[in-house]
Length: 360
Image 1 (tube, rainbow, N blue to C red):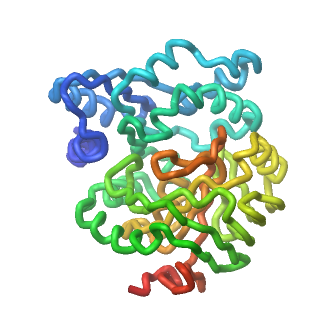
Image 2: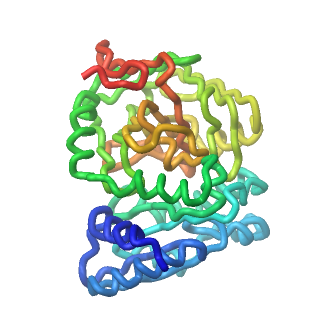
Image 3: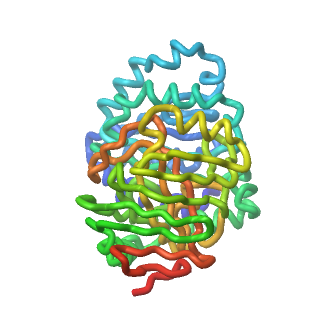
């Protein structure tokens, strides 16, 4: 018997996140382990008079399968498949359900192969990256995700649904009060362990994620001025997870918006290779502030961890054009910094958050 929360989850994804309309072609991507949710989604899409275009993967990203990426020659990786290009350029919405059997699958794939396939599909997926069409990425509970989170599978199910099935209208109103202070800010300063970094949001606005492109939601985010970041940030509390790898102890030093020095306690060669993917990979594409009240500890899953109440995250690489971002890159790598043990955020010289708690 299916968990009754699955029906509510599917309704949330289709009505709140995507707002599916009759006649839409909805690209639905997912893993076989997510079959109960995928079947509920296809049923509900059909009831709405729309088309469910189902794609299954055994592991990989939206535009590749990992076994293919491991073995394809570089010239094939660099050239996108015409059918995929057509699908991404003509679909009306994209819904991705991640349900991995092994969260470290793909950690053996070289950084140049990952960045190569992402670069190949950059133009084809521009409508998604620039939010020209609605899209949402979500999760379905699996034993692998539960193990990473240090939970039993039933505990993780309760956690996942608890962090997603919130009153998102109320959460939006609450987060918007905090986000307003950052809009157009000349200076945002982040201070914490090993960290003193300033950047500017001048001319830029923050977007509140409350039932939008990521589920769980629970953050507000924007694109810092690309030349503004100065100082150092140490992601010392949590590993930076990317491509199935745990890069521990990442430290980045910025000057005039560019990363001029980078180090890590593990996977240093992978970190440097990723930052050298292209010029944009050494600049910031995003500043995000985690606010989800149901996410309070590290899960080893950036899509949850970046929403953790009392944290900030920075993404090196591609920015969001709809939020004024101009940085272009094949990379968009979110790294999470915990500010609860003694950190603070200042906006134009005024402390707005201390120890992970909002001042007002």
